[in-house]
Amino acid sequence: MAPSSTALKRPAPTAVASAIEALAARFGNNLITSQAVRDQHAHTTTWLPPQPPDAVVMAQTTEDIQDVVRICAERRVPVIAFGTGTSLEGQVNAPLGGVCIDLREMNRIIAVHPDDLDCVIEPGVTRKALNEHLRDQGLFFPIGPGADASIGGMASTRASGTNAVRYGTMKDNILALKVVRADGEIISTGTRAKKTSAGYEK
Ligand SMILES: Cc1cc2nc3c(=O)[nH]c(=O)nc-3n(C[C@H](O)[C@H](O)[C@H](O)COP(=O)(O)OP(=O)(O)OC[C@H]3O[C@@H](n4cnc5c(N)ncnc54)[C@H](O)[C@@H]3O)c2cc1C
Image 1 (cartoon, rainbow, N blue to C red):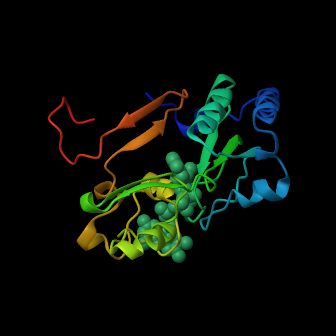
Image 2: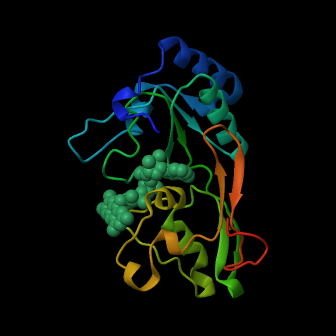
């Protein structure tokens, strides 16, 4: 059974300090601990106050994410992903402190397959950037929350928008994901095929 939220405790200051030291050695200037930047990574429009993380890492690659997660998991320090921060209910808050993984610089569009109506992209690509890229090919990405949210953030919140009645929500528009698990292991879910008979659906 998962522990209740009241059972969760802030990690010991020594654990946080040790994680930040290891992250500094690995990430250099891509690790940021200034109060201003930490404050920018926590906000909410609810009764919750902003709850900033202890540090922010600007991830560039999947391996970066994996390393942050491993360093933090070893020390039981929380990690919080950050897409564009447009979620409204404290989803990017760090109630127990920890390390925010900012994914905005992982914003490459890796491949577009117009005939198959699919594409391969990194999590920090925003919906407007994707639509700008697709426009010349007569294609568009249909999920449209009012904000210019990231694909990773929209996937995480199963975002919708005014087109959902016709095109569904994020659940209906994701074929496959590469996922860094909480222990740092990387798994892949699904393929570009909408249906496969090679074993169980993943
Ligand atoms: C004006 C306005 C209108 C909106 N309208 C809608 C609407 O119509 N429908 C709707 O669904 N939402 C709407 N939203 C809410 C918001 O835009 C969505 O929740 C959006 O999906 C958040 O995306 P983001 O990139 O900003 O994610 P963030 O706010 O950065 O993160 C949201 C959550 O996802 C997690 N996360 C982010 N990236 C990743 C990743 N790569 N991997 C794993 N977890 C990740 C974060 O840790 C956090 O818990 C609206 C917001 C605004 C400001």
